[in-house]
Image (cartoon, rainbow, N blue to C red; front, side):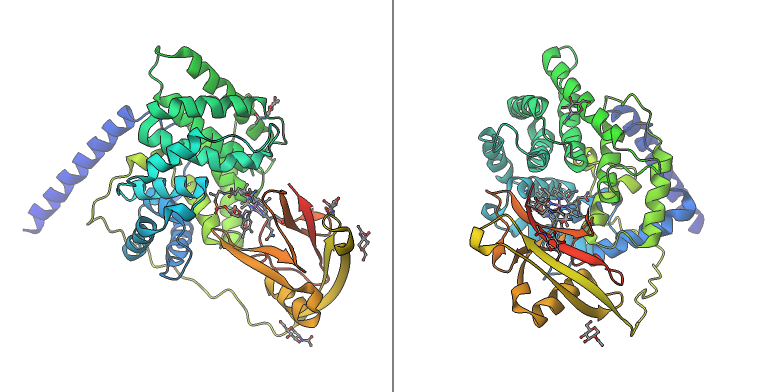
Length: 427
Ligand code: B12
Ligand SMILES: *[C@@H]1O[C@H](CO)[C@@H](O)[C@H](O)[C@H]1NC(C)=O
Ligand SMILES: *[C@@H]1O[C@H](CO)[C@@H](O)[C@H](O)[C@H]1NC(C)=O
Ligand SMILES: *[C@@H]1O[C@H](CO)[C@@H](O)[C@H](O)[C@H]1NC(C)=O
Ligand SMILES: *[C@@H]1O[C@H](CO)[C@@H](O)[C@H](O)[C@H]1NC(C)=O
C-alpha cells in the first residue's frame, strides 16, 4: 500500500514538474530570468512574514485586497483568512471604492478564482472618463490609474487599448518629479498591455508602450542605491516587480541579488511588520509579480503548512520613558489660523509616534488630531482643526528634524530627544 502511495505521489510529482515546465515555456511573457530567489536558509524568515500578514486578516479589520493578492501569489497558509477576506471583498460596496481600490479588488478576486462580475465594467467606465486632475498632476496621481489599467488589461486587453494609449501619452508629457512606487505600478500596467499586443498587428502601440516603459524603467534604475534599495525600502518590492517583468531593460544593469540581500536584512531588522508593507514585498520574495494574478490556480485541497513561526515577543517591557519634542506647523491655511507650536512629551521607550500625539493632545487641546483608516493603517487626517484635502492636495507631513518619515504614526518608533514635526503642506 505504502509503496503504491509513494508511486502515485511520485507520478503526480512528475506530472507537476512536466506541467510547470510546459508553463515555463508557454508563459514566458511574465517569467524572466532576471528574477532572483530567496536563499533556502532565509525562507523561514519569509514564511514568518507571510504568516504575520495572513494573521492580520480578521472580521473586524479593514478588508485589504492587496493582502489577498499577496496571499494567493505566495500560496496561502491560512485558508480561513483567505476565505474571510475573499468573502469581505465579494460583498463589499463597490460605490465606496476609489478607482485604485476597485482595481485592487478585481485583481484580488481574480487571484482567488472568483468572478469580479460587474466591477470590471464599472472600472472600465471610470477609466474611459479618466483625465489627470491637471496637465501637470503630481506623479502619485497615476498610481490608482496604473492599477486600473493593470486590472483591465488582465480582464480584457482589447477593450483597454484606447484607455491605455491615452494613459501612456499622458505619462509621456508629464514632467512632475518621478515617484518610484507609481513608476513601478505604471510599468506593470504597461508591460501587461505591451505583452498582449499581438506581434506585427499594431507596431505603433508597441512602440508607444515600449517608449514609455523605457523612460520609466530608466528613472527607476536611477533610484537604485548602492545597497540595492530602489527608492526607499517600502517602494523596493514594487520596483523589483517592475524591473523583473518589464520588456525594456535599463542601461545600467540591476543587481537583483544585492537588492534581495538588503531587503532580507531589513526584514530581520523588523522593518516589515505593517501587513500592507508585507503585501507589497511578498510577491518579489516569492519570485512573483502582479502580472501573475490571472495565472493563479485554486485547488481547494492545496493546503501548505509552514514551519511554525517562532515569534519571540520582541517588545521588552521597558519601564524607562523618553522625551520627544513635537511641533505642529501650519503656514498654509487661513491667515488667522496659522500656528507653529511645540510641546515636549514623555512616553514609554519603544512607543509608536501615535502615543506621542495622544500624550500631546492630552496635555494641550491645541494638539488635538483626527485619524482615518486606510490600507496602510491610520493616517493623521486633521490636526488642530486643519484637515487634509484632496482637492487642495494638502496633507500633514511628518518629519524627523527636516527628514520626512518613511512610516506612518502607528508604526514609527521615535527615539529619545527626537524632534518630530507635523507640517501642513502640499504634494
Ligand atoms: C499617494 C500617496 C500618498 C498621498 C495620499 C493622498 C493621495 N494623493 O492619494 C500623500 C502625499 C497624502 C501621502 C502621505 C503620506 N505617505 Co504616502 N503614499 C502614497 C503612494 C505613492 C500611493 C498610495 C495609493 O494611491 N495607493 C492606491 C490606493 C488604491 O490604495 P489606498 O489604500 O486606498 O491608498 C491610500 C493609502 O495608501 C493612504 N496612504 C498614503 N500614504 C500613506 C502612508 C501611511 C503611513 C498611511 C497609514 C496611509 C497612507 O492614502 C491613499 C489614498 O487614500 C504610496 C505608495 C505605495 N507603495 O503604496 C505611498 C506610501 C503608502 N506613503 C508612505 C508614507 C511614509 C507617507 C507619509 C507618512 C509621509 C510623511 N513623511 O508624512 C504620509 C502620511 C502622513 C500622515 N498624515 O499620516 C509610505 C508608507 C510606508 C510605511 N511603511 O508605512 C509609502 C509606501 C511610500 C513609500 N514607498 O515609502 N502618501
Ligand atoms: C524619466 O526620465 C526622463 C529623462 O531621463 C524624462 O524625460 C522623463 O520625463 C522621466 N519621467 C518619467 C515618468 O518617465
Ligand atoms: C516654527 O518654530 C520653530 C521654533 O519653535 C522655528 O525654528 C521655526 O523657524 C518656526 N517656523 C516658522 C515657519 O515660523
Ligand atoms: C511615561 O510615559 C507615559 C506614557 O507612555 C506617561 O503616561 C507617563 O506620565 C510618563 N512618565 C513620566 C515620569 O513622565
Ligand atoms: C512646511 O510646509 C510649508 C508649506 O508648504 C513649506 O513652505 C515648508 O518648507 C515646510 N517645512 C518643512 C520643514 O518641510
